Length: 350
Image (cartoon, rainbow, N blue to C red; front, side, top):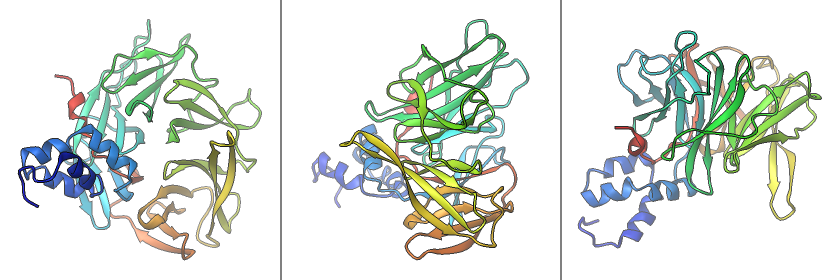
């Protein structure tokens, strides 16, 4: 293909939106025109909608020995090493971006960072602060995407002595804004939120609420609420599968069942559908098993009952195969990650 504008820009946009991110980032060096198109946020949006990228297994090392943010291939895996001086707590991930905070001393407010591993870019976000907080209340973060405005948002939930509430930050459209009505119950102690279908989701157990509930935060409406869940045992967890919210049922020692929430817009209803049944007789202790997510070729990554014990399940063949994760330690997060072409450098404060 000749450089110099032989093809109209809209055709280049269409071609680039179908190519892998790794190739596109190399193509940025071809010409200033190609670089400007590849860095255009509109292309990142088209690329995401067309799902031109296949999810890959991402190993997130926190902290790392490497001095800089970097992404490298490690066999069949991608490995992301973050600057140990910058961050060491993974708060959440959404559409190719990762959100981190730095562990600090008591009564100090943790710095907040966003990372794009594909582009090896980092942006520091100003931390939220409630009036008269003085760093004494706990903070819990979630990263989500507002499809209607094509913007990323961070929600911060506060819990303290006489303080509670939530604030929202729009990437590129700060400052932090207070939410009139905070979460309907405490969210601390229930892990990181799962982003799916335009919302952040926490699976919680509260003594004041009957049974287990799913608390959600609508990223567009910026409102909290509850979602009903299927009546399963207490041995389960939430996971995102290609944009859908799912619950993993681990009550059986022979099978892992995965229920996916289906949304029927025309009927204006939601219902849980059992979509996967993975036979794991004799290979796991359900107290330790976690379903990580969907990877390339539609395979489901499952963490077994030992630290480095991981399996790929192929729904087409109903086969389960072991995979070795290289140099894994207790500080490594294993994610099914689909990268984003979006450059977050434009949001970096001067």
